[in-house]
Each structure stands twice: as C-alpha cells, then as structure tokens.
Amino acid sequence: MLPKVRKRKWIEEDVRRARSISVAVSRIASGIAADQLREVELHQVSHGLLVAIRSEIETLVLDTEGIYVDVNLLVPDPSSDARLLVLNRANPDRHLNVSYKKEGMLVWETMQTGRYAYDPDFKSDDEKPYRSILAFPLIFENKDRTIKALGGISIDSSKAHHFDGLEKRLETKLLPYLTLLKLVLVCRGRYEGNKIKSHSRRGLSDVLIGGDETLASSIATGGS
Image (cartoon, helix red, strand yellow):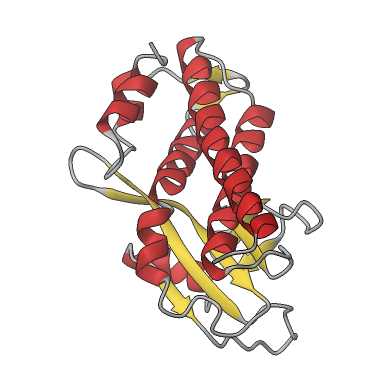
C-alpha cells in the first residue's frame, strides 16, 4: 500500500496529465479551425506534453522526488543533414536549440528503424549526467505508405537500468502523447508565419496513425 501522501501525489499527477492532453487537443484544434497557429503556441503545447510524459514515467518508476528523469523532443537540424536539434525539453533549465551529431544517437536510430530503442547502461566520453536512455520515433506515414521521420523523443535518467522491463509498457502508455507530438510537428511544418499552409484538414488527421479515431475526427473538424 502506498502512503496516503504519495497516493495523493499520483492522483494529482493523473489529473494534470489528463488536462495536458485536453489542452493540447483544444489548442491545436482551435488553431486549425482558425487557420492560425503560432510557433509559441506549438512550443507551449509540446512542452506540456513532454512534462506529462515525464510524469507518466515517474509514476511507473515511483520517482516521487522527480529528479532523475527528463524528456526531450529532437528534430532534424535544418542547418545540417548530419545533426539533430533539441526543439523542447520537459526540464526548462536545460538548453534548447542545441545541435548534436546524429551518428551514435539512440533517438536517430529509432527515427531510422521506426521502433523504440533502449540503452540501460549509457556511458559517454564527456560524462553526460544520465545513465539510461529510452527513445521513441515520431514517424509520419503518408497515404501512399511513404514514411517521413519527423523527429523523436529521448527519455533519459541519471539511474542506470531505470527503465528495465518497462519499455513495452511505456510504448503503449505514451502513445497518446507521442501521437499529439507528431501532430504538433506536422503543424509546425505546415504554416508560414502564423498561417497554416494550404492543405486539407483531413490530411492533418492522417498523422494520427495508431491513435484514437475519435480524436483524429475531432482535430480534423476543429474540435466540433
């Protein structure tokens, strides 16, 4: 049995996570309906989703202190085909827009294979502060079955073997967040300034591969 205080914390986190999904859907849907999405809004939505992902993980590993895990959103660096760019993080204290070489990065591996990857005992020459890395791809599949890697999620922990045995469970648990992050990246790539580029709204819902059809329909119709 969990102590009452700890149990209350997890219940509160459940509520926060549900709200983060609701807020993400609402803001994206209203932006699509108005044909207007600002970069800052997409940034705020993605940050909320990354924080919710971290909360899901902390609940599973019983990290009540919230000091071990971070979640990062990486995308191809537009300035170099050989690098990935950190677009957002759950931890606002870590730097954004940092560019890393793709080669050897676990998240790049997932973007190539389309499957999650896990390194339970990560070691680096420059003594990175994390020891476990779990990565998930954000893949867009067009109707003609062509695949585009939009980016990936890199989850790190300062504890070695922190996610052992949880990989599959997390893949399922995080699906709603990963699906919405895919949509954020598709929206980000389909507007000029604050305006959505010309496209069918139905096409935006196609990104919700493996997601909830009701959610896809809601976003495609502007949440109506």
